[in-house]
Length: 545
Picture 1 (cartoon, rainbow, N blue to C red):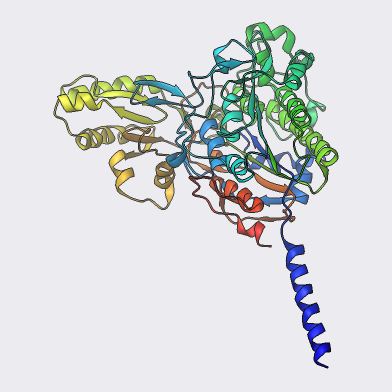
Picture 2 (picture 1 turned 120 degrees about the horizontal axis):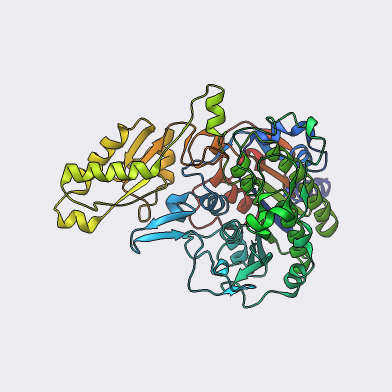
């Protein structure tokens, strides 16, 4: 009898352990992180009926959809967006406070991936002098490299340098970006390697880039594009050399006045080209072909170029997303066959959203406007001189931030807080400025809600300015045609987030999640350390099902 009970206990113990082992999440062979540049969340719902079953719809129906996903900082630009997705933190910690920002030490503007210490590879252009040297923290792809003793590969792919470099991180095997002009090829820098591998050379020599200098017309009958405004209107910029911003566009004939091969980036064919190169990278680097997890960081940049040029409500944006849907389907089919169904994990998100063209909003009686930053700078400098009888106390105004000249303040015996308060007082009197916060307030208090929390999360103590101002809703520094982004309002902060594949069960939630939560979630799926500056938390609603 004792032997019988002992056998039962043993069987129960074995069964329990087997069940626990069986329920452990599967570690993927490959993680593909996709950032769609300037993708608002509502593009998923707005174009849903036109998407096919094997692209965005497959990601949503077979994956986990976070419907209330937001950026938790400002400014919402491309550089900070890509950095925040992959580092799991905000500009407060990772240091990428803009695409460009004023460097108080150098006394000049710097670009987020500039690096004069490296050499271009694949070109002689300065476009190749780039690296992640200004990114202060690690990315989740860095952590995977460290965890696997550098055996797991990381390859970054994008048209934009910052869309490739910042996600790939410091330890990437390579990051590749597109240089248009009269060259039209993918390049890298000596930060990663001293030459282009054969597969990149073969791609650049294949004629693929040239093949996209063709007519851009709508994918389907333009009359069926009912999720956007009329084709000819007053709110779109278009291309130099064509009188109207209307379909079709003869890219070959327009290319000479629009950046030569660079015009491809401003059309959905730029996303086609990115997909082509990504598939070549997967094969050329043998990504996902063993049990050590690799990373492909993939950014679709053309959606941003098209949005800036034509605006949120354009037929050009609608066509771009219908074509991107096919790119997503093509990528999924390739991964199914090359890596294997259930053997890879994808996440898809954005680096920011975008506002409707303010001149269009005004035409339908919604508040919006344009801020003249050049005139504002002149007026503020004049005000400060009249108040303090000193010149050059303001060193720079950019990205909604005002930088003081500390040496001038010291020489004139003017206190920093005295100038802060005076400048803040002036700013808040301006009709188009909605809110103002000073450095002293951002460093002396902890804000836990509202726009001040977002400003604080985007404020890097060493790199940011001394007074930060926020414009009225839908008020931008931009031309009256096309659109932009950068605010802390929902049209800029509400982004998609979909997880799909290994370790992900189908589902959705309307519970709020934030951009810095992505990297810790990926790290949890892989069982690796969080990025060094991570401030987000794993998305338990998906992981703990």
